[in-house]
Amino acid sequence: DHIKSLNNGYITGLKSAQVEYINARGSFIDAHTICCDATCPTLKCPGSRKTKITARRVIIAVGGRPQYPDIPGAKEYAITSDDIFSLERSPGKTLVVG
Image 1 (tube, helix red, strand yellow):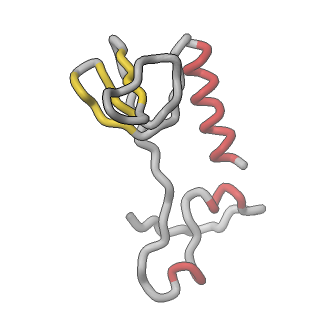
Image 2: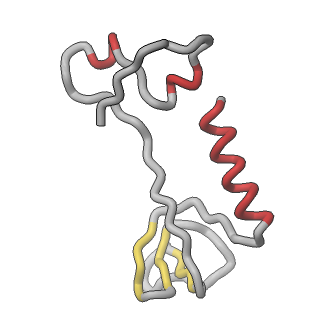
């Protein structure tokens, strides 16, 4: 799958640059501290099951997943940006919505 291959490439690049990759949801406590739902070898946030991570620099990659619009025929006649990479051949002319 092309999208997974791209994502793995990004993760590999980060790790080779000695960046710790943590896939989690979180929020900033201050400029250098994040409280998130990840498990890693750091202190726990007080009063919760979340983990507190402190770093000099933080990279935020919000990511996203394509969704079909809530309109008639969307799922029958449209494909997502992820799906387009799974096609055996180019669809030719395309219209991008969103």
